Length: 307
Image (cartoon, rainbow, N blue to C red; front, side):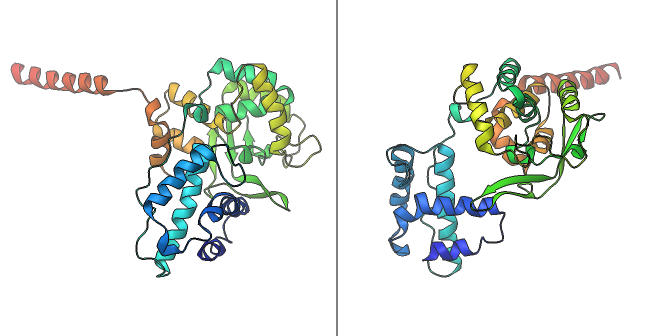
């Protein structure tokens, strides 16, 4: 099967990425396309599949429409398989080109206010520092649980993000490079730096900043149990930890951060991705541009008049 041949080419990717591909293949792609000959896959059928995933779900979650992000991920896997088939001379054209995909809904990209962040943090108890770190730095959960004390510079109010921890079936949590294999430094507000200072007092340089209650990497299951209860307690049901990245972007933009700063904070590979996700949050500066250009024109006109 060409899907399996494509999957075999991904074995050198990060363990979590490989596990994600496997999950999508088994739950959405193979159940629909596994028995369909490549040359019989049509554009219309793929478009209908995308619609069906949105409304009816997958083989694993039948009757429950998948989130827009999950549908898009499923489509991307199928699209990569078809591109692989073209390179292997098994297919002439890609029927997955120009498929209409669902848009991310407001619920999937909710932006919290400062007050909501603080209330959520208070309700999260011992995980308050982690909630605030996620909401004010924009780092990923996997990056947060891999941070060691030595990476936190309280004087400079910076955290160096160089590693990530991800769950891999049968292996537990595995420490790897960050998503884009880069190291970045993120700013920390003074109030959060003070809170982290109290948390890290007496910790060894190599100690995890946010360990589990048993030591070792904090699991998403342990965190989500507390996080979900905290969110419900402060009327923020539906908010998920990853959504705090969106909040961090929103709050940074509100504070005046430009697109390159937000890109660096979030660890996006390109500013284009950041702009695609959050461009609508930047203020409309057209009036300011017009006024600035008019001021320049008026100054030039004045110089002409006065010689």
